[in-house]
Length: 89
Image 1 (cartoon, helix red, strand yellow):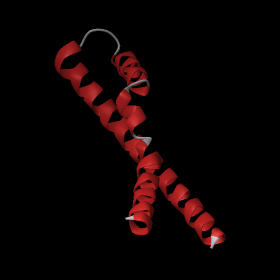
Image 2 (cartoon, helix red, strand yellow):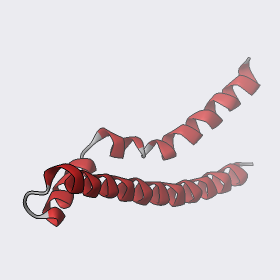
Image 3 (tube, helix red, strand yellow):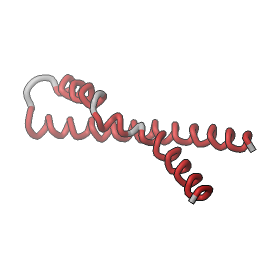
Image 4 (spheres, helix red, strand yellow):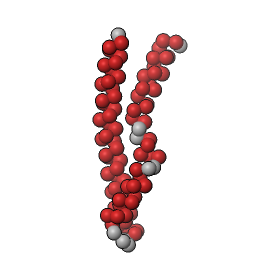
């Protein structure tokens, strides 16, 4: 039984890691696109690439970036709640 739980945990972690990388890359590319659009429509002063890189540096420290880590936390919480509800309620 313990090996089944361990195997499930490892497979789930690998799947969540893959989802995290894809979600992180997608979110970063969307942010890059929005920064490029903002520079094209409003700023147009200075170096465009520098503006985008500074915006991405701010994004890297933002709350939104950290919320993507919920990909790892939420599934384990759901499984834990389900196990509790099935066994103790």
